[in-house]
Length: 111
Image 1 (cartoon, rainbow, N blue to C red):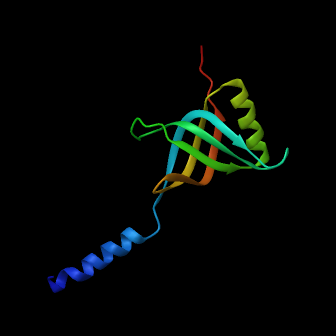
Image 2 (cartoon, rainbow, N blue to C red):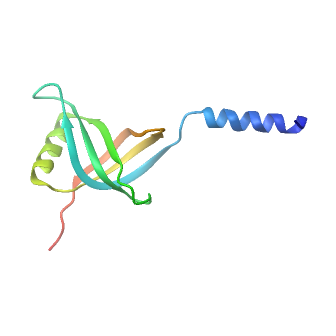
Image 3 (cartoon, rainbow, N blue to C red):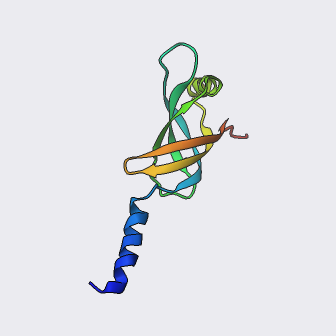
């Protein structure tokens, strides 16, 4: 190997092993699952839909929420309404990890 290329390969290797980058996404979809251990308190929800700027796949995003957001999600799920979320995410090999949920609202179609 050429001596001058070793540091470049080392830096590239360190970069690829490093912490995955985070990005902000906007998504629209349906709340497909809700789960919590008790009748009150925080829980988890899963939204499946479309992410702005991504290919046509419909990823499922699962994340924890506080009690108020959980109740809103439950009501929207029961009504069959779509939701819009803005979140800071980190891509991992087999899933998206929500680092911070920034917005969670219902989507109303105007008639």
